Image 1 (tube, rainbow, N blue to C red):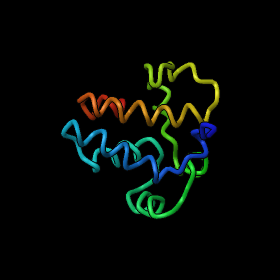
Image 2 (cartoon, rainbow, N blue to C red; image 1 turned 60 degrees about the vertical axis):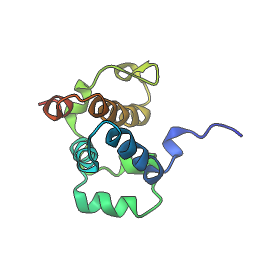
Image 3 (cartoon, rainbow, N blue to C red; image 1 turned 90 degrees about the vertical axis):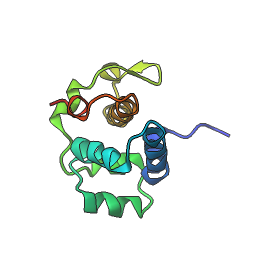
Image 4 (spheres, rainbow, N blue to C red; image 1 turned 90 degrees about the horizontal axis):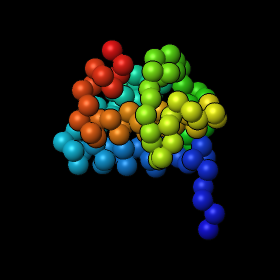
Length: 116
């Protein structure tokens, strides 16, 4: 079976994995939502609607109301690749989100995760 392109994966299939990952480390779904809303500009209501529908990552990020300019400050390695070196803008946005969730799971302070 061929590997599915990450941009075509459904956001609402991956979201529970983000929550599960951080909950194992004592964090909450609310913190995951805070990261997502900070990065994308979605609010809690729009995020709830997205999670009730089948929306692929490509559409999730392309329709994001206000992708945070501070995202360019996100650096480091995720899945063996430095996020700042990813050339595909969409894949980079997805990996930014992965990196932020990873930072939460590693108990980084929320203010630092949100680049304050």
